[in-house]
Structures are given as C-alpha cells and as structure tokens.
Image 1: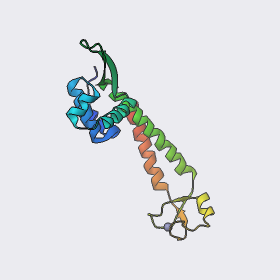
Image 2: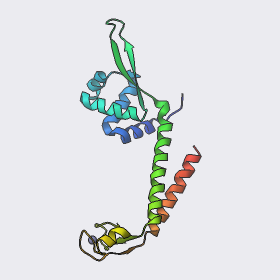
Image 3: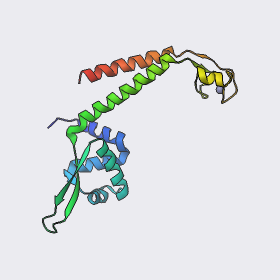
Image 4: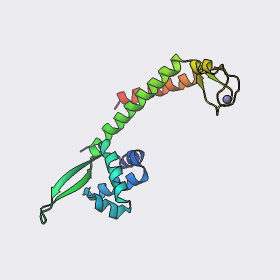
Length: 170
Ligand SMILES: [Zn+2]
C-alpha cells in the first residue's frame, strides 16, 4: 500500500470532476466501496451526475468497479471503489502530458514569427495570417507589427526544464 497524502487525492479529484467528484471520492474513501445509489443518497448529487463523474474518474483509473453477488437475493450488485495506489501514476502521466504540450508550444513559438496590433485583446497572428490580412489586424483594423516572443520562449524553456527535472526525480 502506497502512503498517500490525502489532500493530493482531493486535489486530483477536483481537477478531474470538480467539487462533486471530491464529495464522491470522500464518500468512497469512508465506505471502502459503494453503489451509485448509496453515493447519490449520501452526497445529494443526482444519480446520472454521479455516474458521469464516476466514469470520468474511472478513465483516470482513480476508481474501479466490481460486481458482488448479494447473498440474499443472488443478484449482482455493482460497486465502485477507490484505487488510491493509482494516484502517483495518474499525477505522473498528467505531468508528462503537460510536458509534451509545453514542448510542442515551445517548438511552435521558436519556429514562427508573430505579429500584433499593440492591443493585447486582439491576440497574435502568425506571419502567414498577417500576410493573409495584408498586415491589418482582423479584429480592429490596426497595423500589425512584429511581436517579440523571446520572453514567452524563455518562460516556456524554464517550465519545460523544471518539469523534466521533477519527472526525473520521482
Ligand atoms: Zn487589433
């Protein structure tokens, strides 16, 4: 059994399914295992919402399901339970995904020239987009000029480095 920081569990649950996921995960932690109906009753969350969140948690392997035969009726009861030992690998996988996104973003910043109209609400345009618009901002009509993205590149490089280091030391 992996020792686990409880607040981390709720943080991950919150990211995956919001406040309601935190409630459901808390209930599963208390009970060990629970049916969807039991969860609906104790959390006050609607049954179809419970199901949706459980499926989302299941996609991240944070919960698992099992069928248990009811000794009295002989019917199968469908239970959900937490997989807390999956937490570390969920977090690691998430960090890897973020790292890949950051690297792709960094590559995009490095290989493109950007243009802007001096109004940050209008956004930035690539060289191709600027040419298509005859160097006029499609939003406000202002003149597009070269945008220096070296600060963004620097920021992304730092992020990529620190995330890489984090992943290596886990
Ligand atoms: Zn503009």
